[in-house]
Image 1 (cartoon, rainbow over the protein chains, first blue to last red):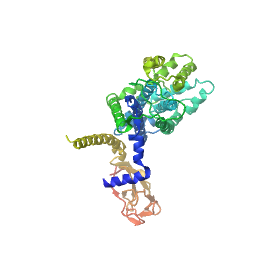
Image 2 (cartoon, chains in turn blue, yellow):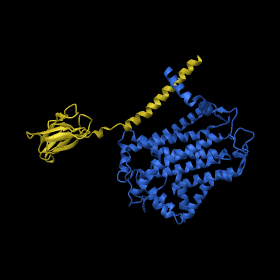
Image 3 (cartoon, helix red, strand yellow):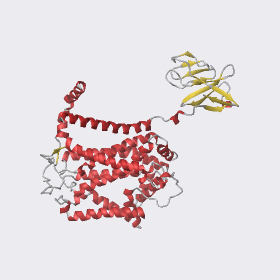
Image 4 (cartoon, one colour):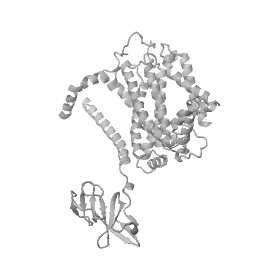
Length: 367
Length: 139
């Protein structure tokens, strides 16, 4: 113990750990009415960490070559000890990441936490959401199954509807006219190198904004639910008399992560095939399109929208408009009120949007 | 219960749960990364005798390592592990000199696997050779 104490003192005089802990942990105060939904970010960080670790482990046996990719994934699933566990965790983790990002976004929306001065938090979060969707899409191709091959064909093809540059972008992304071995090389690089670095960087920026501006106050359990921001000068959003992040809220974070992990483990061990349709177990055949090829659940609404509109460009424009609206939400919703029940227009739009998304997804699934 | 005893008990329980969780996570990861038995190759290596060139050597995979078989002065087949006993490079057969040379640090062995020059501390490990119906079986 004396040795550990000496090491601590050695570091303390150099880095001022006590002061850092007081400022960032025990002295980092949060609003007293903070709730469970504020731990969504920690859950997502945990999922991201698990994805990075399982992804690195998969790289040990995965071969990014069109002739060997499928057999290497099959070997991971069937021959490598616990390979099935690592791969299933990675595949299910990707869906969980999207699901919890959606929940995080919804909680921020309903509690009005995106309102000024936190527009940049929202924007960086929205960029993260988009990047996670891209990393999921690029990772989907890597097993080189019929499902991956044709889902990627459909997903990349829809970009071709963009006037003038669409076809160029599609061919650039694919590395050729059709999805093929060059696409695998490109998507592999994007999936394991480019996008993870981008995500890690934007997570850093997102946390910096959170740290610099301060945690928002939830609108529940308060008499005054109006936005406190005055807008005349930069002020850190202090919560005098609030609860400390450590140990109080970190305990909530740990509890939320434990609940998430239970849900995750239940899916991994009791219904591991939930995200794997039959076509995921057949090697890609560029000459045979399987019937009823469907994207992952989070792209089903986009898929159905594209099906609804005979003109692909219109379908794509509607999706682009919806995404732009969502990205610019803090600049569109200028009201000071944060409580969802005191924002009827917002509630109608939000609940309508959610129902539309769920409805289109179910329709897409059964169509 | 005394406050410090309770705290100690809870900390011990938490530590035990964390250790069990850590173990349950690390064990699959270790098993996943550990080299499999399939990587060590077959217990025996077989090939036609005709693959051994006159005066030359035939290299082969044997139990995850490299082996070499040559024909000695008496015309008998002899096999060795081709792994140099110095630092593990693969020895090369020198047809003209009829000896083994390790190119890494110039270790030299006779055709019987004995060290004649350089840093190798031990002779090359000998392997069992059987010939039946024109097929050579090692191991």
